[in-house]
Image (cartoon, rainbow, N blue to C red; front, side, top):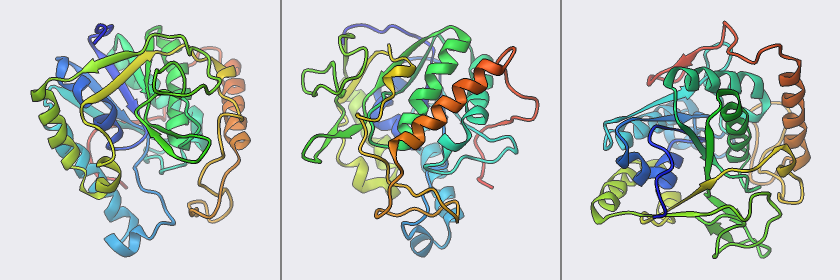
Amino acid sequence: MLGEPFRRPLIFVAHPDDETLACGGLLQRFPGTLVVFATDGTPAGYGLERRYGSLKAYTELRFQEAGRALSHVPHSSFKWITGRDGSYFGDMHVYEELPAAASSLLALAQSFSPDAIVSHSYEGAHIDHDACGFIAMHVADAVSVERFEFPMYWLDESGKAILQRFRDGDPGGAAGGLEGGAAQVMEWQLSETEIECKKRMMAEYRTQQGTVSTFDPGIERFRPATTTSSSFSVPLCRDYLYQERPPRFYHTRRHRLAAKALLKKFAEFEEWRREQNAWRQEPHVQNRHVGHPR
């Protein structure tokens, strides 16, 4: 490990299990950390209601799994960002409501007072991961703290999934055109005790067993985030598994959302932010702690 550049991080992730896979060792090392989830982790259009009875029941399972996983590191707290009406953001939909999502995270950051925000790097592989990286960039700027990023997965030219390696700036990665490729990658060497704890955390995510099992529990990588708005680009992305047409939560593996649709939302958010006299939490934005999905 090359050092520990923060002591009180806010870890902003897209889905329950991302925090464990990317930061399970990090969470064990510090006396005060806050995990913030961006979505309910429940994508529609994948037959989950048939397997679990309803999408609400599946969401409840995801929330329970997160609680059990993070109970293995009791000094860590966790919350979800919420929309203007207090509801959770649906899986693959947080990008549609960036002002509300960013305002909710900003309020949590102001309350928690982290010394750094740690979130996803922009990989062009999952729309929620990339939206979180964008939101984290703006919130870190608003509260004047450093931002760090971690890799999850991306696809190489042959379509193979590359796990736990930065798309650039990593000896095992490949050039992807991101800014900040020269940034120093911190390789966290987990102890045997930390790895065993992380394995227990991973095992709690039973609904995600197929995905979780593909990640190496002994690997965690971070780097200072130097991305800017220009770093989010179409060429990095092959588009996203999602379809933006009614009904709102309809998407399947056969439909895709163009990368430029996400970048358009990013541009709209930045225009919105420029129009704010002082970017702050709107009075009606709520931040809900651990609880049950609506």
